[in-house]
Length: 271
Image: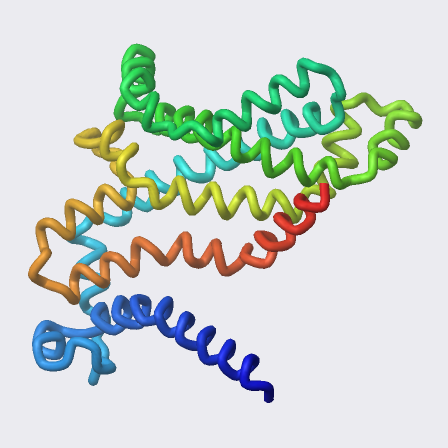
């Protein structure tokens, strides 16, 4: 083995350990009782206990919070995939000035931080009577994440040969039929990328649900965990068990769809 290769492997192992250590600490502390944590916080639990998870589930009211997060995330993703893919198909296949101007407008939506419009956005949502509702959060996330979604889909669609849709249109299919029956099934890799990246953002977002849903009874997981940690900050086993339960759903989704992230990006970059 060459010295350079050996050094690179050592560096990569060190980076992997640095990333995995917080996960190790999180899971280890969640499986310990207070006595084990005070004696050896980073040692393996002996014996491990799962009592923290049941208590954290009840104390943090994670059941309703998980339902709220799931509803908001799933419906927002459906809206983003439907609107984003169709808008990107139009932009990728249209060579007019209008299409180019719209594409630049979507790119501006990525560059400009949404925090700049937080106050007028809050006022608009409040005027519509959507504060403290799932609908308000779904509309907010769909609007905020749509430019990024269109950007990803547009790059991928531009890399697809036009002949697929053209052949369907020659056979009598409309643009809508050609897109839904021919083009959209080919977007599976980038759809996986869109799904996981948007899901992680929406699921983990803390500030927006705190602002729009605080005190409504429809709080999402990050807001409930924040309140829970503040209440049980001295009970580390309970706190870390709650964090593990809050992270498990989105981690599971990421593990299932991770192969599509790189595949979608690499295919889109070709365009």
